[in-house]
Image (tube, rainbow, N blue to C red; front, side, top):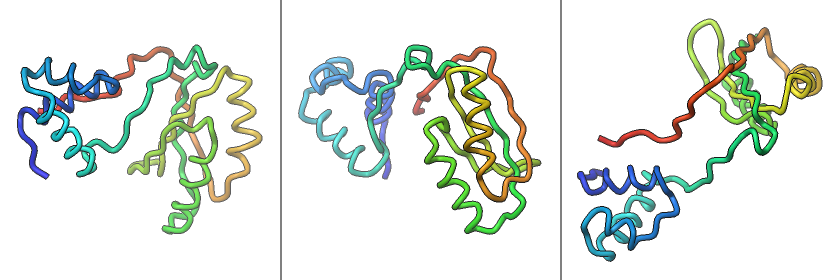
Length: 152
């Protein structure tokens, strides 16, 4: 789907505030409600807007410790990779999964309360997953999360 500058502005505004009303969005874009509503629906129907979500404060939900785990697998067949992905994504501690190139096969973003909870995650969950060759943990000391990007 092709989109124009107005669509880009709509997308940028919705990334900043997914709960903005059509009326508020129309006012910001200096348009009337109906065309803005129709454009948002078109962007949703086309799949450009795939979902709306809330961004939570990790510290307030006891998930303030962020670890990136780089994992290599012993077997790289499509079935093994897909099973591994499905298994780790079913774990509530795993927030994101990326299949990557390089020395490791996947990158997991893990969020837990503290080091003890991470230890339990490693021993009771990750250790039981088949075909893991090795992994490396990278602990986040601080971060500035950006959950949106400018549509240009």
